[in-house]
Amino acid sequence: MALTSQEAIYVKEVILHGNKLRAVRKSFPLIKEAQLQDAIIYMEQNPLVARHIEAGILYIYKDLLKRSKKIIPEPQPLTTEEQRQLLQLVIAGERKVLHQEKTEHGLLQTVLVPPNYQEVEEAKWLIKTISRMSKDDLAA
Image (cartoon, rainbow, N blue to C red; front, side):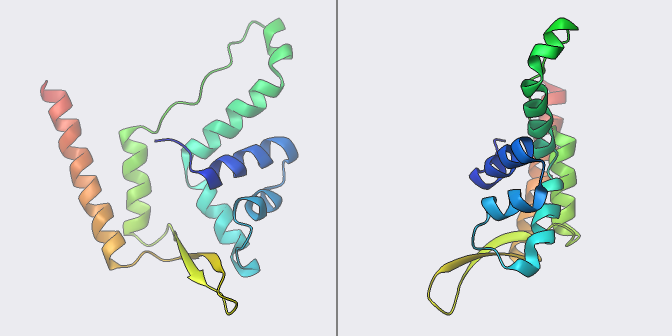
């Protein structure tokens, strides 16, 4: 699972400036002011975002780390368990989802809203699919 373009912008901004609010504004330029904190939570709930931020910060200090002979790790993909945990947050309504809505001027605006019934059902289906795939891998 790769980073979305918004996540990549967020990661870059946090690494370069250390300001999550600025990073969210850059990631979602048309987001409502009232939803900035929700957007930060949305980003922080994804462990892949945190891994990329950590790897980026380590990369910045790579020259110092070379002297200590530490290896800079590549960000690892989400584990099956981490994927399940993110999906459980959607099912529980604790992870908002991104939607686009039109403003009064006809522009698209990013909003974070609680998952609807279909999104919850898709998350449940994905958990079942991931579980089946994991069992198949263990059986092989």
